[in-house]
Length: 94
Image (tube, rainbow, N blue to C red):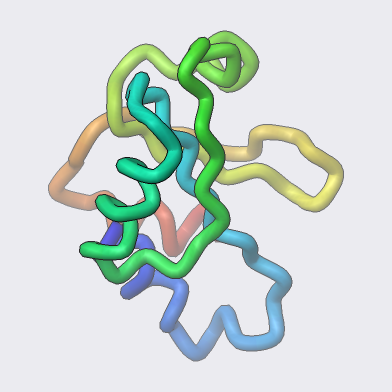
């Protein structure tokens, strides 16, 4: 999440309508998830997908996966897991 926030702070992205979202597939009560989210620094929309329905829609095979979706809802880029070039890849995709 820190890498995503660092990329979004890039001045070249200023003015873009980027909405960072986390989809959490953990089967936990919503209050527990809110408490855990409050410990981080990720001010994003957090969706609870305990049934893992988004996994198929976005072809997520590895957790975590970063998916970049354009304004029309089309997946334009995705990369699984933590890669050494994650920040660079996300910057290029955005």
